Amino acid sequence: MQYSNGMITGEFFVGWGTLSLINAGLAQAKGRGGLNWWLLSLLLGPVATLLIVAMDPLVRKGA
Image (cartoon, rainbow, N blue to C red; front, side):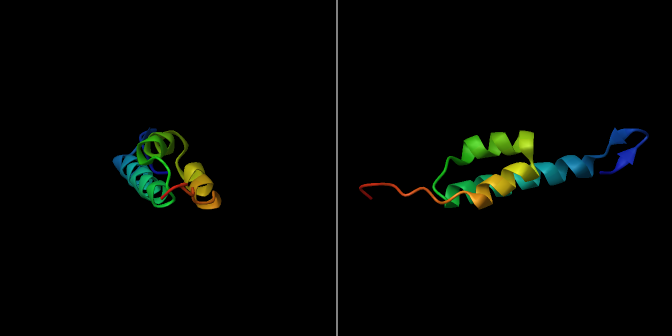
């Protein structure tokens, strides 16, 4: 984490936001709600990535 005069710099927020978008794409690829995972990723960051990668893809019946 980078600090400037005790404040987190903009690069941190850009990286965190990019990670949340990647997580939303991963979730959609596994058949899960992208918007829900995007919001969750904004709060959990790398922990949400771990959860998405560890979960099995959803199998939809009747498709």
